[in-house]
Length: 494
Ligand code: ADP
Ligand code: GLC
Image (cartoon, rainbow, N blue to C red; front, side):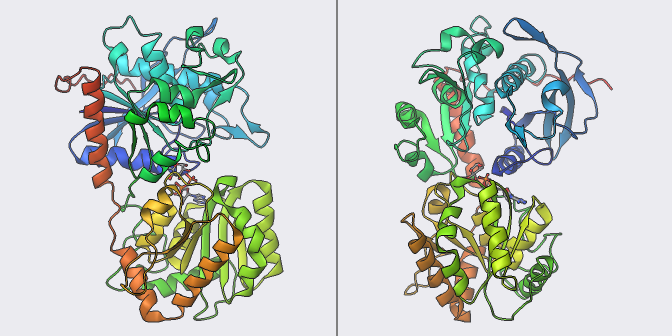
């Protein structure tokens, strides 16, 4: 099958969160299964490209025309990459915004991106299925079913749309319809309209052939008022076409036996290197290493979603325990302040790096004893799955993918991979941390928990197969039972 990914970020080119990990790894896993995959991304600042595929597309946005180029077209790990190159829109400091907040013209930026992606599918890389991700790409199915309704091939191009986070919807005032070149006819309660505004994510859910989200639990949760961010009714309306597929992990990048960022490598067979990683981590964070004292780690975007208000609620009770804490993250000011304050209140046991740093993220995964993720909601969550492989025992709230991936430790049967709590309260978090500390004190039990997690397989193999089955279903739903179309050569000129 020829599978075309459209996404607003992907490693190794751009990243603000787990979406970028997924859009790097899933295409590789699909290629490994014998499919052809291309990924379309915006060309953000710093993205190096090697060729021009098309010097200019003509993209109508309201009463204006824009002329982005299509760059690159080269293969990386068997995956073909195309970049929509419009410097005025994408050659900026951030991806979605800067220090002042979201860019004011995001609707136009990503509308142009979606239109360009369709043109690439039409003229450069004919696909059997388009797989879109999050609100930034949600207009692809909207345009296919409206602006392209006279195009015999594109009008029935099947689209699978993956929601990575219901909390980010791309909502704009009605006047963006015109500026972003979105057909007025879509502005209805069953279309893109949402309480008088334009809502990109809603449109993606409504117009796609299948909608997926990144864990089975979250697929149920988004159909409830508590987790649906106002779109639970819309999600329920697509209930028969809404599927949860758990993210996998790219073990080429996240594996303690091969990880280049670590002071020492280790594996389930031989855990000794983990101690050197812990000592290294203390050094990186400038904390004294007290042998035997448990070390909790956090790596995260600092957003409300991540449950740090629970930590704020019981921070001093947590720090009253005999433990150390290292935190790596950036984001909302109040959480940065929280962790800075903890570091200055407990200078020999708590440290925070307010930064985005991939090398240190790996070091935390490897060197910590426990990984803390008390999320309010978590569509999938990758760090807890990385933690399992590194023998770093996750302490999580039972929501979304955290609930699907972490099994609570059961002393009687010796089963389970971590510790989890249900109630969204500081008390429940504290209780669960204490539970973990209690078991940490028994080396034999702790090793059991570590090995239970380290031997789990959360590779992309199974989810990739689930996506392929869904791509087939989406094609069948559009009456497309023909085998994949012949390859068309990619035109590149230096
Ligand atoms: P989300 O996408 O909601 O942020 P995920 O757990 O799915 O949550 O993915 C987060 C990804 O971003 C992981 O790969 C994690 O290691 C990485 N990450 C988050 N914050 C940082 C940071 N401050 N420095 C380095 N990597 C980070
Ligand atoms: C989102 C979610 C996170 C998920 C990631 C990749 O950023 O917040 O839970 O793991 O997307 O799907």
